[in-house]
Image (cartoon, rainbow, N blue to C red; front, top):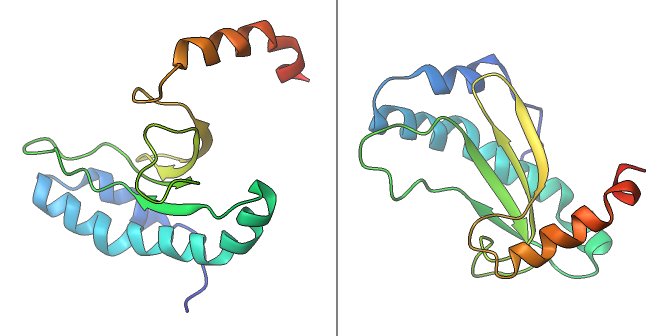
Length: 127
């Protein structure tokens, strides 16, 4: 098992590569193995903090046919089959920075109700 040693300049330069196939190949070779390394290092602690197993999902960008992705990410979710319908954590890269966030995306049911709850508790969230 390899340990995660961080992202480097070459990883971020991936998003300057022209062409869908060429960029996807670089994402798969440079970045996706590092997403797996991160997961291997945090899997047990993440499961303990979440009080259940969290599964790794790596963006495949499968629906893309022309435009290369401007970013890529990995997701950590309690659901083994998918992450888009559930709150989940993401670790990903754009061409100029790393992002780590808790995500509530378009396929999540009751997202309006969740947003309303967040807005009602915005002061507590800021604290």
